[in-house]
Length: 317
Image (cartoon, rainbow, N blue to C red; front, side, top):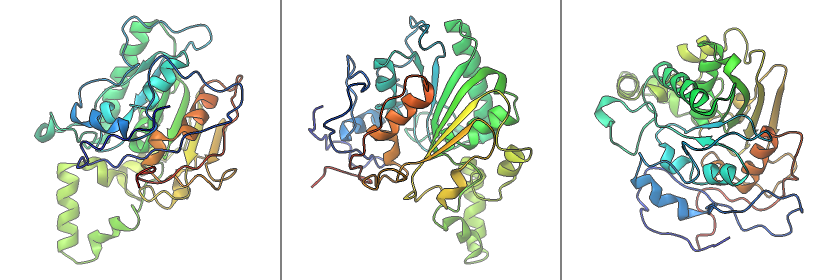
């Protein structure tokens, strides 16, 4: 795997994390090609082209195989697009035989062409997800999809689709990476609304009006209560959550755990203290994507190596 770091586009709004190269992986390791998979800052320049799907995604000729009958729909996190979020995940899954689909959502009118998207009303974004799932099922002939998402895209948004919009019958597996289940304090930032009244509340209300997805993911929000009022899960899908105890965005990290049948909550540090990934780096962590493969195909699991995973900008000296 090349380890050359691309230093261009260093001022983009999303902090990208990478992990160190891995050696000595078990013989059953996932396929490495033919698409390149950047587990490092080579993913960064894609942020400049928000409407370009990542390599391996949205192939209209892709037909799900008997081994992997469910197309995988990837749902990006808040303030990102399909382009930057899935430069690692899309080619990694495609190399391993999956039909992969990505899309953009939640870009309000004032930011329709911006590389900062997924900030609009999550209820509206969930309807976009519903339409995307219907389109993917129609184009592939599959009966169900697997959902894999990060933060909002792995938490509140797909949970609203499943729990409120009755999407459970269309979903086989749901994998949430650093998911925003049950809301977040954002490392106590959300309490700024009451810190300097009335200024804090005015700022918070302005954010809610311009980019409601941020405040809808706060602990105690109306949307959080609506989404999980009748339980975290629904019959049908199997659920996997991938959680890091060093998460600084969805806090406390215990908010990310799901409760219910057919749920597996995986704390990344449980079996590997070398994993120091935080919220953003989980998008580009080799360990995370090994766990995703195992969640999508639990009958053919791969040992997940314990390797160093650094937060933010690993390998940058």
